Length: 174
Image (cartoon, rainbow, N blue to C red):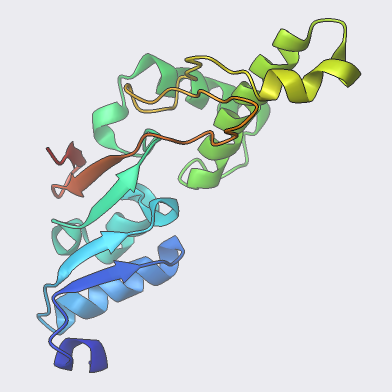
């Protein structure tokens, strides 16, 4: 209520999914509708918006670089299906609504790319190859996202897309 009474018209939620869902529910109960931005780690249809209420979550924005594997819009995506099949085969008891499982899978694909580029000289070559990724894209990255590193720039994520939740799935904000 303190934030609402402050006349704040924007709110940034840097929380985990459970706390984000609680905040979204509380904002709705207070009839407070600031422009709300959600940390990408909690930007999950299944883990955050469903518990908060899909209708209550409509309009919330987040910047993402990976596909939300829980977004119904992604259900037919071949790369999401590959991830789902891998999860069922290799981690059947893991919560597929936990965005960290998709992130771990994606990070492992990037590491696999680096190791593949190393060839037989792993010890001497791993840092060189990690610093020389060119237009690499694993399947769970958003379509325009590519990984490019260099010896002077180790940043892996350089592209993010602002997205708004429409009550069912994510729409890109143009």
